[in-house]
Length: 188
Image (cartoon, rainbow, N blue to C red; front, side, top):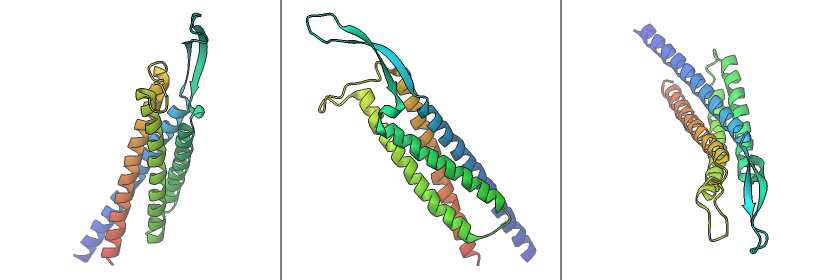
């Protein structure tokens, strides 16, 4: 009977490790895609600008780029950090797949929480600035830009969505890690 419970524990641990690896891989891919999509958010449009009210407007080519807004630069920075960490954690988990060290799991859980926080703050900043681009803020005189730069705004939307999916996957990783640590501590 004791051998049967050992086999169940081994199967549970291997399925937890496999799900952890798969979730980390999904988080890595979504985070990478979010950073790349944001980094390719560039669009040029010809916009009529009125210099003098009595003269006709002048057509001026204006370009919207991701690095013109610090919120989008922060988004890419946080996602490059998150992506790098997720790749490192995958390599670390694969290299230590036979180890049952709780210290590694605990260290990864703590770092996962930090990375999750980074991802959510990058996402929040992007969504806040994106909403101004869609809706405008008349109190400070900021106009809509997404009615002109539709492709640019679609990139921002797609990047934020991919990031949100990646952030939720990181939350699932944290829950899985904590549940696994709780099981390990409870079985001792």
